[in-house]
Image (tube, rainbow, N blue to C red; front, side, top):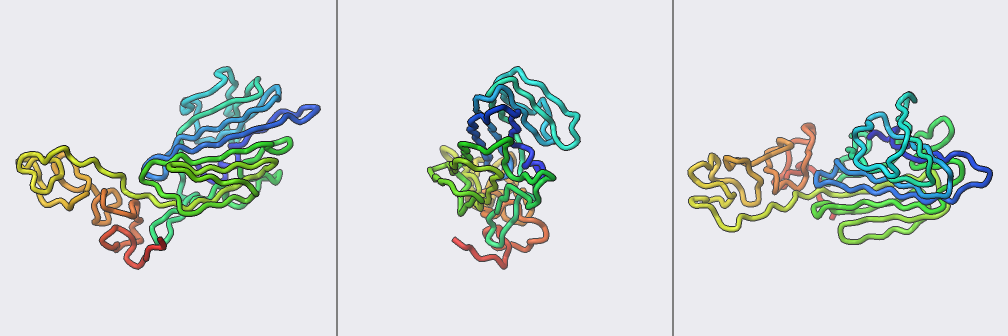
Length: 267
């Protein structure tokens, strides 16, 4: 989901003689790779109807959950797909992935996510926006797996941040055109240890010695079915002990932890 398209994710309420009070909630259920997620978007108000713009990359069949289920889908707009609801509120859940333009890999191996690319649209809207009027109440959160560590975060509007185990949340009132910047680190997911070593399993990777083609796998490495280490980013450091997964080719060589050799940890 590109930064330009992200600005289209906000609701456009139909004009009313008096502005309806609006509450909105945006929740990212982040996956262990730090890039994929399920996104929940909710709007609640006493408005008679709503229109909601989705990026072109989201197809109707991608919608995992829609409430109310009665809605109209219009894919004719050139820059977005339009959902129309004859109701004062709605909730959507659909999958997505942070694109390269949204993420910056830092020297210490952490990632910086920015929710907006820096250019407003032709009407001056950007980030998470609502029209007409503002969000009376706006909530935003990341729900995190155990292997993702939040390092720092900020918003462009005043609000209250809350950190809990496995979650980061933000709440504000009377805001619009809201943007976020979050820095986080993706650690290797913990691999469950075998209940007991298989017969002849000298490296204790769970693969019996008679079919282990790599009998000296480093402790903690993730292996395939024949006992050889997996290395998704091909940097020579096995998954499971690679602290900087997804190292780009141009960042090679790496140190023994799988991070760019010239980097030093900021933690």
